[in-house]
Length: 144
Image: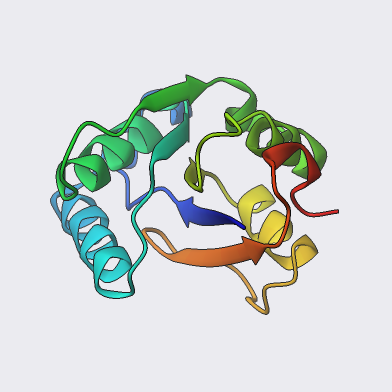
């Protein structure tokens, strides 16, 4: 079984170039709260893939810090402006040895991916996440 956690980056500042927007103080709190909610629900990622955008990278760092051990973090530029198929391709590229992958990215694409994978969410708010389980034995078959 494989588990994907799809998380929208936490709240970011306004007024700078989109790619370089950093998290607000509230956004930092959202990221930490999301990590605690994951832990309380029994979910612990063993691989993190985040958009290369500053706000997504900061969200990933804050979430990782709430879990024990060193969870690998991979930045992926595709997640900044990619479509649903490219998001799914990034997820399917996760190492087969990893059971639970956290994907941190952007709306509306992330919410569309969640819906495509069977989640009933109208749209993910900043710092919000959903868990998607698959009986697939490897990531290549995730979501098929």
